[in-house]
Image (cartoon, rainbow, N blue to C red; front, side, top):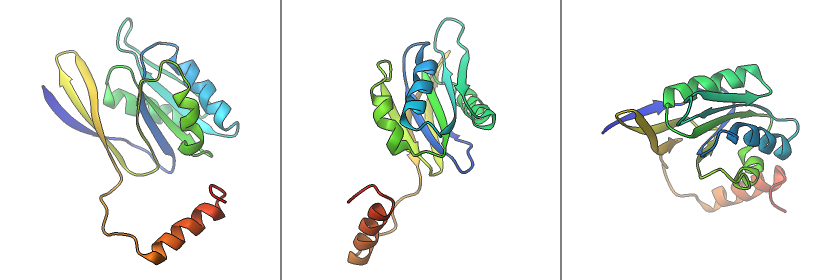
Length: 159
């Protein structure tokens, strides 16, 4: 078995990475994104693991669809999907994704730099884990706590 690290190419968008198990995933993911935020711009790609073994795609933004497809092609892992998302946040989308019956796992939902650890054995590839962002450099101070709480209230996520 061989392991590799695939760096996800992205610009200023968020990325959601997960695993599913059925060809209808692409259409259900499209509906989940639209239901979470009607103004979201997004691109979806899904690596089909049997049958035609195609990278299925959908979305409403050609640039994000293209980037999702390129990243899915580089990952090449069975039943993995990737969503590139603008004008919305993963926190609004993930509850909708968790209600999609064929979703098995969510590996990452982030705007940070993202790399994916992939294992390969013969004709099969799978996601082993993700590297999301950077490691911590310290422990928050009381000022940091106040800043965090103020930020969440200022953007409307806490009262």
